[in-house]
Image (cartoon, rainbow over all chains, first blue to last red; front, top):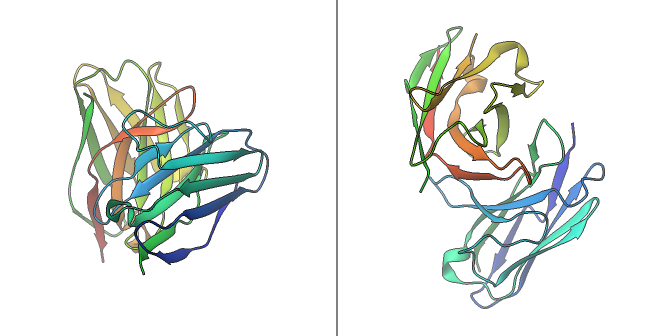
Length: 107
Length: 118
């Protein structure tokens, strides 16, 4: 199985801050990397696919980069609705696996 | 747009079988592939299995011996069975559609909490 790690596990930030979350795969996954946002009591929502592609409707303050084993999710200017937990997921091979999550909360 | 809704018992006794159904509306399960996930309280996400539009199934090896996924195209739903459950199987169970090109999951059902009781 491909193991996914994320850092940090949590962070505190203020509205307007630039936030960066990293994700690392235990082997190369090319660009088969997806980022999700999950709010308490809700299902995950995908934010980025193919490492850097934004689905329609996702605000442009979200961006993703990376390939191979190292990936980054950046929120350019944190908004109140962005306080949530963020997960990365590898879509390279089954079993599909997720990172442990990064909780972003209010400073 | 496509919507998914999980249904099934919220309480299952230890050693028994957990059975859930995901009903798809606004689209057909004859395209894409269809997945089950779970998330124990306060923990991360685990992919359980998928079934595609040809009936091909794939399972997480960690659960493979206990899991069966199936679909009923006439009812536009797919189902999960997990046998010999223990307290470790207590989780919110989600269903979601898979994108066959990029393997992202969208949309998701709202999730259903299944508690295993002794």
